[in-house]
Length: 189
Image (tube, rainbow, N blue to C red; front, top):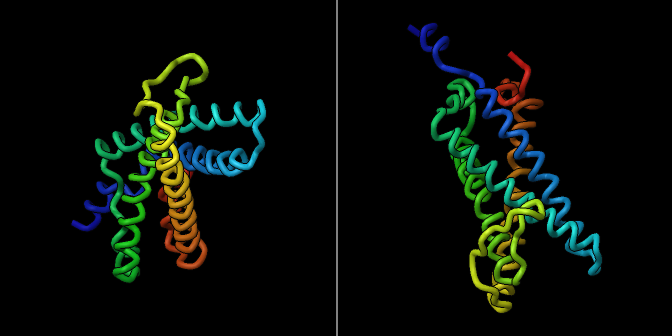
């Protein structure tokens, strides 16, 4: 009976899950780096271009996050292997699940808060310079001043969780050598 369970229970993520994971990971790292860089630029055409790019990328990340969540809800991911879960202290298992949940929440919150900030600041998002998107709120400089730190804090929280996620994956790969990372690496069998 055990061999039947092992052959019917996927141990690796589906290729679509892997693709969405790695595309979103790359997008988030690039987005955070550009966000840090552009925030300190003086007012210039480059700064305006980067801010527009940042907003477009935020909308794309939001769409990718929606696609990823939809895929996850309709395609159950492989369970954490029992041998790995058994080797982990209970707090690590809880942290594993909590980190994934918080990552998903922040995938949506960071761009939505940014969109609200942009709307309140009076700068509509025109996706790729051709598709105007609706504003979340009416222009209101006081509201924009309240929302701006939320976008920054949530972006830093997302970056911290991504760093924690990467550190945990590398710990499993190099220290524990338990094969957990291979479940999300494309091209491996």
